[in-house]
Length: 488
Ligand SMILES: [Ca+2]
Image (tube, rainbow, N blue to C red; front, side):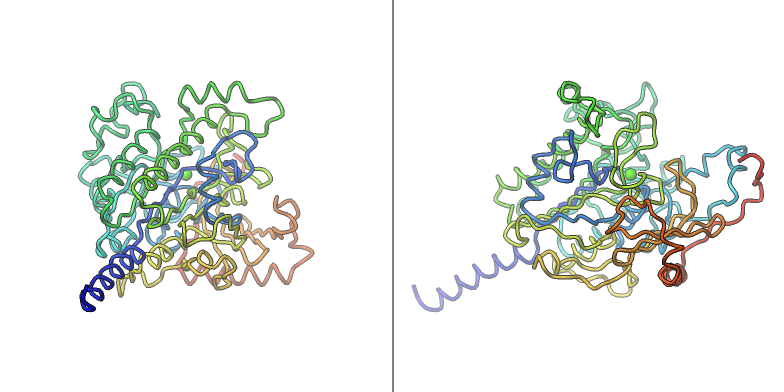
C-alpha cells in the first residue's frame, strides 16, 4: 500500500471515529412526577429498578439534582430552553389551579397569580431546534404539555412538539395525563384524551392492547433502529408515573405479594408503574448495545418534579425530604438524575453538586459540539455540566439555584420563591412576606427554621433572591380583590 493511500485510509478512520465522538446520540428520559427516593439506587425499599440502577452504576448519579419547578409544564419548558421558568413567565402547569377554581374557593386566597404565559413561545430556540439544524434526527415521545389553553385543534397544533423542533412527535399534545394507561388510553368513552386528537399518534395496529409505557418504549426502540446511522436526539417523556395510578397487571400482582406493613413505599400500582419505566430504560439501553451505539450515546434520566404525596392514597413517599409535588419544600423539587456515556463518564460516579433542569440544555449542546444560535436564548440560565461529567472531580462554577412559583397548589404551596446557596435554602412566601431558612447538610428534612438564629445569612440570601427575581423579570402574584379573610 502506498504511503499516500495509507494516509488517506488513516484520515478516513479518524474522520469517521472523530465524527461519532463529536456528535453522540442523546437520549433524555423525563419521567413525570418521579420522586427523589423512587428508584432502587435512590433508596426505595419496594420499587425494583435494576436497569436504571445499572445505568447509574455505569455513569454518574446526582444526589442534589433539582427540577426547575414543583409542577410539570415549567420544568419541561426549562429543559427545552435552558432558561428558568420565571424568565419565561411560564410558572405553573397548564392550565394551572387558579384557572379551574370556583369563585368561592378563589375567595379563600389573599393573592392571585400574575398573568403568566400558558404556552412555550416560538421566540425561544429549543434544544431539538438547535440539534436538528446541526444534522440530528429529533423525536419527542410521550408527554408534552406546553400548548396554550384552548379547545381549538388549529391553535393547539401550532404548539405541538413538531412545531418546536421535533421531526417526529409521538403522542405529545396538550394533555398532562392520559385518561388511562391501558389501550386506547381513554377514560370510558371520552373522546378528548391522548390518541383522540393527535395526528401522529401511532395507529392502533401497532399499539393495540399495549400498556402506555410499553407502547412508548416500542416507539423509542423502533426509532433507534431506524436512525442508527445518523446522530439522533430522543426525548422520552413518559406519562408515567403521573396519575391515574394504574400499573400493568402482572407487575401489580408481584408487588401486592411483596408489600409488608413495614414498607415505606407501599402502593403496588405505583410500584408497577415505576418498574414499567425501568423496563423501558432497559429496552432502550439493550437496543443501543445490540446496534453497537452504547459508546456513542449520552443518556440523561431525570424527573419533572418531586413525588406525589397529597393525592388520595398518596402514591409515594419522599422522606427524608419534606412534602412533595406542588409544595415549596425539597420534596417538591429534588429529583433523581443519572447521566451515562460509556467510555466517557467514569462508572459509579456520584456527584453532590446541586444541579437543575436548565443545565441539561447547555450540557447536551456542549456534548453534541453544537453552538447556540447567536442572538437567541442569550439568557440561558443553565451551565454545562460537562466538566463535572467528564472528570468526576471536576466542578461547575459555584452559583445559586432559584425557584419562583407565584401560585397556589394542592400540594401545599402558596406563592413563593426560593434560593439554594451552598448548603443553605431560603424560601420567601409572598403571603405576609414570611421567610424560612434551612441548612440542608445538617437538616435535609427542613425541620429547623434558622431565620431567627442566622438573621445575617437570611438577609443576605433574601437580597440575592430578590435581585435574581428582578434580573429575570419574575412576575409577582397580585392581591386578590375577592379575598374574604373570614372564609379561610
Ligand atoms: Ca409532573
